[in-house]
Image (tube, rainbow, N blue to C red):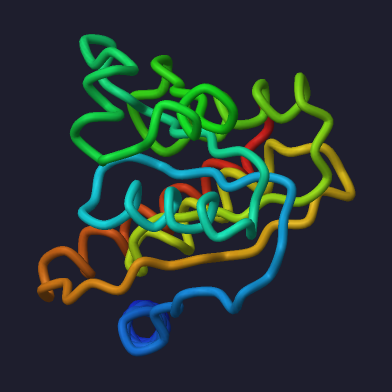
Length: 176
C-alpha cells in the first residue's frame, strides 16, 4: 500500500516536471500596460524591458534586484538606455535578492505608482515561479501580462527551477 502511494506520488511529480519542461511560456503579444517589471538575473530580460518601454507598450519600467553597487549612469551605459528614457521611465530597485523579495519590492513600487496593469519580464523557465510570487503580492485587480524571454535551459536548470516552484507553492500555502 505504501509502495503504491510513493509510486503514484513519483508519477505525479514526474508528469508535473514533464508538463513544466515542455510548456515554457513565450514572449507576450504587443499588449499595452501601465508598467513593465523586470526581474534581474537572466540574459535578455533588461533588454526586453527597455524594448517594451521604447516601443510605447508601457509608460515606465521597474528593474527589481539590481546590485547596490550599480549606479543609474552605469546601468544606462551598459544597456544603452538614453538619458531621456532613464529620467522619465526607468526605476532601479536595489532591495531584492531573490524571487520572493522581488515580489515585495515590486509590490511596494506599484503601491506608490497606483498602476493597474503590468508586464512581467523574466526568463521562460523562471516565469511560473516569478508570476506566482509577484501575483500573490500585488493589489487585487492588478492585471499581469507574462512576457517570457526565450532561453534554451538545460535539464539541470529545469529540474532545479521545477523544485523551486514546488517549494514556493507549498510555502505560499502555509500560514504566516
